[in-house]
Length: 69
Image 1 (cartoon, rainbow, N blue to C red):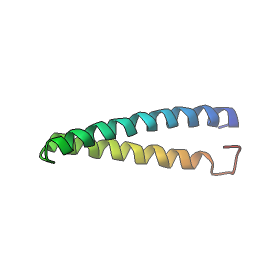
Image 2 (cartoon, rainbow, N blue to C red):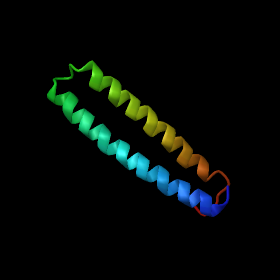
Image 3 (tube, rainbow, N blue to C red):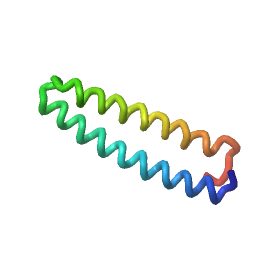
């Protein structure tokens, strides 16, 4: 992957990660409002955290060879 492709992928991942962060905040807010009693919200939040972790790992791997990122 060349630097232009890495840059484009980096921006896509940052955007996706940002959307997941906002989604996590919304789920947490709802979960707190439910007094932590919603298994469905807990599962959704767990899924969001897993996706966020996957994106973070991919972001970190884009700069393996000390490119311009």
